[in-house]
Image (cartoon, rainbow, N blue to C red):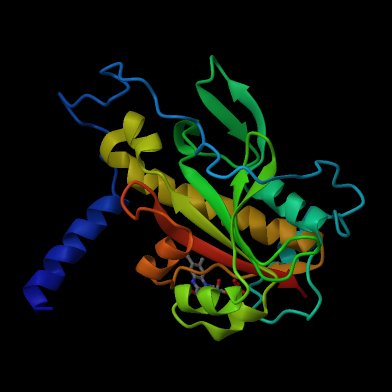
Length: 252
Ligand SMILES: Cc1cc2nc3c(=O)[nH]c(=O)nc-3n(C[C@H](O)[C@H](O)[C@H](O)COP(=O)(O)O)c2cc1C
């Protein structure tokens, strides 16, 4: 890439970090009274796995100061897999829906989100979770359930390739992939939506770190992934929904 082209791209990318909230004369789809998109992605499969919401027996550490002080990125995991109840807890920590605001206007979750738009979806690459076959799953936050997208015996290879060859990830029990459905936020926030969605992903993964700290698990945020392979693995179109972040989790 030429130096000039690079500088131009830097300028454009930096715009994403700035506020575009003052947009005189520009109407959002919400202001145009276009019907809002669904609060969550609708189930794509039929195979639902209900998850428990009673986490008391799963939590091993509940001192918030200990959890915060001990937080760090973990890339080395034990052989043993995590339990379905531990997975359920982590899904609850990161995207759990506590209620619905207004007339189906927004979800209220365990993490904050700009305008409560919650434009993220959670997918899992399951490598070693009790009672779950290896494969790709999609979280249904309204039901606190999982749906199976596809079983894959050699899921570890897909995981490593999709995460740009980061070999340590194959020893994790499960990889959380966060995708964005940008229009859920664009509908209201137009050009600011993209910044908000990325900030939201940070909230989810921070809660994943803290949730892991409560259940003797560890995680490490991953932004170095292969866009094309990650989107393909999750069967996404890469245009209206695509991966923006990942986080392998395992027992430490
Ligand atoms: C946005 C973001 C992206 C990251 N991407 C990667 C990654 O792709 N691979 C990796 O091994 N670590 C990744 N990390 C982990 C950082 O390297 C780690 O947070 C940092 O070294 C500080 O260490 P600590 O989290 O243990 O405090 C990422 C962290 C963040 C917040």
